[in-house]
Image (tube, rainbow, N blue to C red; front, side, top):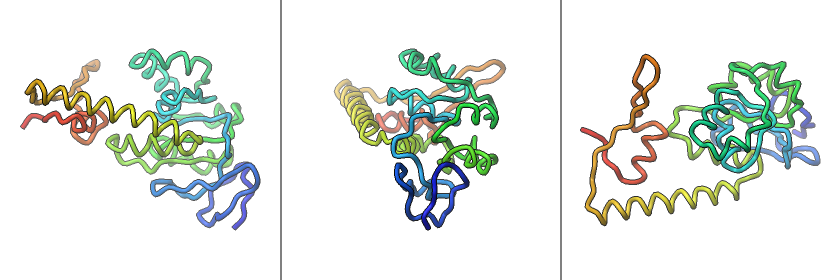
Length: 212
């Protein structure tokens, strides 16, 4: 099937795209494949996908303020990258997204599954079929590929692997083998990050033990 890609719901029968677009396929793509711009310029991100764009020094045209604020708090260097990014609301507001006139919408099913049809009518939409935050590496590569930044993401992961290796080497050199728990104190509750979380996978990567 040949598809014009100015918007419209993704069709699993799509096999080729019109000029200026490319076919995006991925094992975790929700309702794909889908035609997306070869060089997207006005990107809207849903949920934590904004973190990937910020790490790649790409500013989305729109995102959710609560994720932008979290990034600014935890990664001050990224705050400037996202300074001009418009808030699309939480949950994402379709009118706010449409007003931005995006050429690509990127996110996960956690934020976009229920409104997928409406989002796809605004712009080509790619959603990662999200299970849990332990998939962060795969999600980061997914988003990077969608915005034509696969090489940039590969470089970031090279830097990550180097840092992990350095930490692992230092721990071994100093005969350090601590058992580590990761907790976050929030108003009225204490959040514990288990092995199947973003933090848990990082701890595993560097070779630290979890408590018995």
